[in-house]
Image (cartoon, rainbow, N blue to C red; front, side, top):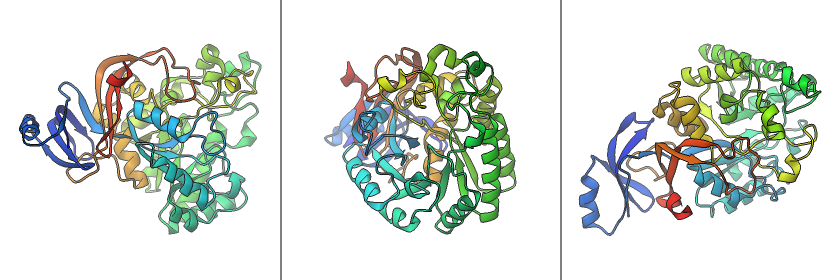
Length: 430
């Protein structure tokens, strides 16, 4: 038995933001009561007690967009090292993307990563690819992959450029009540990927990625979702026009969602001048007006989810010249801190709203058993101090390809609890 006493329960699903004691037994929340009740229970039972006085207790964070590079590229990351980074960042549930080797276009690979992930100490979910080999030519067997455990379908890392194939995929997914999550970048508008086509690219002698690469595909796929009744997610949104397209689509009842990454609501293309390839990502960092539009989308609910797009690479890969370096940055260990620093502290979101975008909404949209703190629910929690600072000066991921290394953040995480077990304890790091 575990008792968490005196913490500020912050649960978007119930709307509760008040001091509560939480009793956990056999991985399940068995009682939520007023502060002080937990002390009496601790006397009656042999229980470990966590004094959460002055701390926030929230549902474990949920990230439906991570790259753990396993199988195939485990020199960058593997399931266990990725899970370690997730725990340190307060995440209890993550969904692995399928640009692996072999791809997650077959039942065996999906079953394998789920099985190995079950020993990680958190909930590891797997996507299924939309097309065989992520080649954009032939649809996977969605029934087979769903039966194997796929919780969503995506070719993340590659766009689905064939409009007829995309429409067929949406129609098939709609029949099965499954979501397709989309990497929206049309290659015909991209000369040098990973950098916005604009002033900074010109300064570096590059042409970059035009904003139309994203906008055109978002517009196309909203229309396809409307025609087919499919439910889609626009991943890692980067352009103001895309935010507005999704806002208007939602008003008309089209089933479209969006996710924003911490780096897209924090940085602009100028970060490339400071950090080089550590600020190279697909889609790229764009303008201050785009960053502001993403924040506005998070404020009004147009963008319902914050996802890290945790994308580890080796130092050797990122040290190549900009054009040859791979795109992507790590993000699991800095996501909550960036959310508090960039969204809550300036007053764009309340802490409750931030937790909603980082836990409740992604779990609800994708149908995961997570993102809620209530009696009878699984005990997946994060306990943190939104005011306490921490310096991100090391990582438990295999990778350190991030422009945020060495920065100070608010939101020190003290415990990550999954299935009632302490998966991460900051005291043990000292």
